[in-house]
Image 1: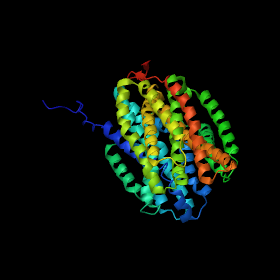
Image 2 (image 1 turned 180 degrees about the vertical axis):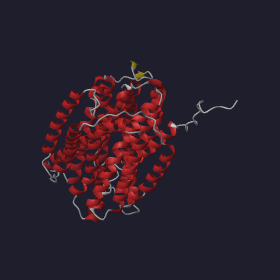
Image 3 (image 1 turned 90 degrees about the vertical axis):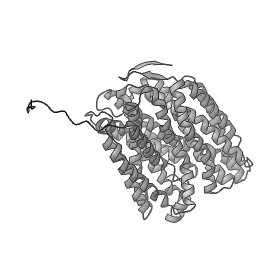
Length: 488
């Protein structure tokens, strides 16, 4: 019998989605874009000479990047819910590639600054997108391993940024830092066209414009104020530090009130109900402390190696490389251990090891052997590696599925605040300590060493509180629907 037209025909089989390939591509792309967050530090002296700008002006190449991240990231909760994964991936990588090309071709500081801002816009979208995708498609019992890969992006990329820029600048002009990124970004886009599929669900949420403005003033003001503390200590602040800090604090208070009023409606920009989950709150606090420590060390160690020990930019970058490699090599292992043992058995020893390393850094002087510095940096990296993956996995894994985009955006936002705070607090402590030493008659080198010692001593004291807090970390377990079953 011949089939008639009333009999429905079978639809062609859909092209299979490969979530593993998608996540791998997102991890690589995120690594590339995050690497640019700290790549400028070693290059600033050369840029000051080439572009004939002051240190205060050159610093905007990093500050503007952080500011843009702080402004864009809070909106990613809305973007991830509203737009499909594929569209957001191409938007993020397209913005990053465009910004990189602008920076590579920049005739002067103004255009270079624009390029950095466009770069940061793409970077800000990529990290929460990666978090949310992993949480939605990776089973709970394999989530630790995947978050271990993300930890490589979050912690190792900024750590090796100075090394990468030092290597490039030792042989090429500063534009090469951007030129080498362009083909990598284009390959990622080409692979994305082949692999990236829409693995997450979307819904027609609305964007609250008032919340966006308040978040920009709040997080932008805080980042700018914190980033300006170091410049103010050297007498180069553009505006008094208290101005952006007060604006940021007041705007943050208004932002929090508005988000609480909007509650769980579609208009809420960041759903603060995530903080009702104690596991999320404790883990986020520890992530903030860990990121503050990481960025503080990344700013202090190069200053110590160059201004106290007299090393150049390339040796400085190479000395920071072993620690970054330790963190990168340990991240997948720590992720697997998390899947087996949970968060607390990893975070608590990690906090103890990091504390020991910070106490070791507090002994630095003008006569400290280089081998000791590298060893202590590796020990610190080991401790942080045992903290990052379990903390981020426990924090985001404790949330119901509908809060994943908001949790990802909040974690990414506080990481930017922590990075700026770490830089500001450590530099300020160093500056105050060095000024006190100069007042007592010490030379510049000895005074700088004394200031760095003071900064690390305060950090070491605070690390004891971190060890105590780490004892309260829990590991959530979830059912498929996203409801929390139990924590241990």
